[in-house]
Length: 202
Image 1 (cartoon, helix red, strand yellow):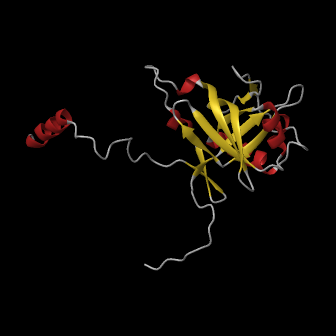
Image 2: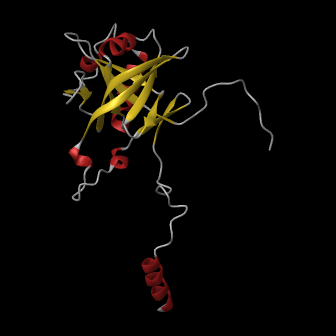
Image 3: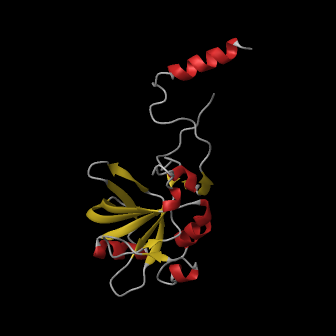
């Protein structure tokens, strides 16, 4: 099969589409849609977002050293796109989109109530990379919707209908193909024996 070789570019897709909320003291909060976001450390829990310096939210985050990452679901797809193309300089996005603020536990910036997960972050470093500057942040608190917890307290995040961003388009997640470690996990012997007995009765 033939292949084409293109110039270097960002082709690492799909990515999480997230809405990042931020706020200066005594000003209205703002929301910026970010695709360049990711986990960078487990312990301590840290993540990063990359933002163009000309974006309205850039200076807010740089000055306050905090923000909230709000995970996006199918029900927030329209709002996510809107917050990515409209500037907070011109629009009160919470008001325009009728989004309810939810108070954060540690940082001053609010989260988005409609989002299933609000991740509160404090900036520890800013790396100027080029078109985007990377905010490296420590996760200081997480709040989740209780409706995603089952009777045993397990958090079923994948039931929230999360959205991904791939090459300029939004997609909902597909079917589950496996769980971490399934490729090397030993087969369930009890299940195998039950299946064998069942087959022998046919």
